[in-house]
Length: 166
Image (tube, rainbow, N blue to C red):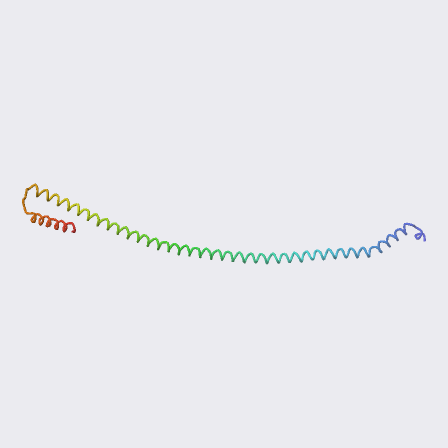
């Protein structure tokens, strides 16, 4: 019984009893803490999976929007090209018509100017011929009756008019 009287034995036994008695509630608390940590990690993993799935869905939506945007962009570009082509055709048509009208106006003006010039030249030529004829007749001192002179001038004028018209 020497060991029962040894204080070290009792301290050791007391220590073991304290450890055994305290180990159960401490182990339960450690188990609860470990379970809480496990649940927390599991929840974070589940939340990460959800966030990943949401990110993939958003990425899919973004991809669809990008495809739609590209298609819409191509559609808008094609329509713009068609509109530009139509406007260019319309503009070319209007420009051609305007040029044709201007050309016609210019031709009318040229014809009018030619006609006026011919008339003015004819008048000047007639006046000049009449003056020259009168001066030649006066120089030659031809004494003819005024009826004969008027007839001669009239004949000369009609010949000149026919010549000018040709």
